[in-house]
Length: 470
Ligand SMILES: Cc1cc2nc3c(=O)[nH]c(=O)nc-3n(C[C@H](O)[C@H](O)[C@H](O)COP(=O)(O)OP(=O)(O)OC[C@H]3O[C@@H](n4cnc5c(N)ncnc54)[C@H](O)[C@@H]3O)c2cc1C
Image (cartoon, rainbow, N blue to C red):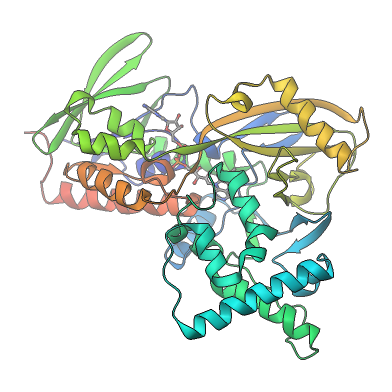
């Protein structure tokens, strides 16, 4: 008798888990609440354009996922393009190439601000010599302790607050510090100073935590996710769309079935193992009244930042040179613009381009509920103010909304997450994985890595005869 596995969610994580568990040993059903597979990694169909939910480059974000990326390329991506990353930052009314070059950073600052930053930075270094800097829980204090307050206010403070909608003092340093590396910032600042004294390292020294090239499917990330889904189906998995998980049946430490609503009916699907890739707070709700109060309270602390993606279509070959441009200025509605045209030929029809603007917000707030046309108008105005577009140049728009774009890492969230995971993982046949399922800010390579490890655990338990239905 095959081991029956139910997978909740048909984003890249759920599809990859199903791909890793082929028939005849496994009987896999994927339950997806939406009307199609793909999740955040799907592409948006617009004639002649390749548009994803933000540019979705495939690369290994950590050493453990290097073999995964190589496997994905060999299995699904022989036609994938290798693209050189081009990013810039709108900083004090000029565009700086990212990773930051010290020369550009200093050119963008007036003498007074540069002096304030330099003196603030020097003071932190002197203080550090006198007494070690503590591990401040808040991101703002973490940066101020290491680089000075003037430096915090220059870019990182406003950017973090704009993207996550939470003050820098409430954002957790533990997580953000990993993205804004102390080492890389220290090098930028040090080189900036040394260059001024004419004895610094070469100007071209760049500092970034991410690789400078990535792979891209020629028809968008949906092509990769779709190919993983096809492989899962070839392996015997069944995909049920418009099938929302509503409740779990639990006996002792085992989940025995999931109640699903589809076509207006509610039915129980029995299982040996459950792989959940849906947002962690949504998974907790499936436990219903049986969920312990302290876990429910911890779950309430796991908040997501939502995103409206506003795509403007323009009759011009391109607007930027870059693929990504970041805006920390709160007066500009979007925090990042993606121009897919600059990934390479074939991403936009000849002579036309699309500007995909990311506006972070909270699900249900005024931005989330604003009519599409109003969001498009707001973005078009901002491009006019930036002197990038002329009035009337936008020829159309399309808007997508993501309710769970970014997990928000507020101070104390690590403890809440540990509480929630300890409860969920107390169920021996329940695996919660992926970006939503683990409340982690991770990319597709890590999602497939999670799926691979969960599948390995299920295979091992099935081989040992553990967890099969009596
Ligand atoms: C703006 C942006 C840019 C990004 N850029 C990159 C990049 O450059 N490179 C990269 O590798 N990654 C990138 N990522 C990350 C990448 O998109 C995610 O890591 C990945 O798509 C997450 O996949 P997932 O399957 O874990 O979650 P999702 O794609 O969110 O899938 C979860 C699925 O669960 C379904 N679901 C929810 N509730 C239920 C329920 N009760 N019952 C059944 N189904 C349910 C949802 O409908 C959804 O389809 C980016 C993400 C964002 C937001």
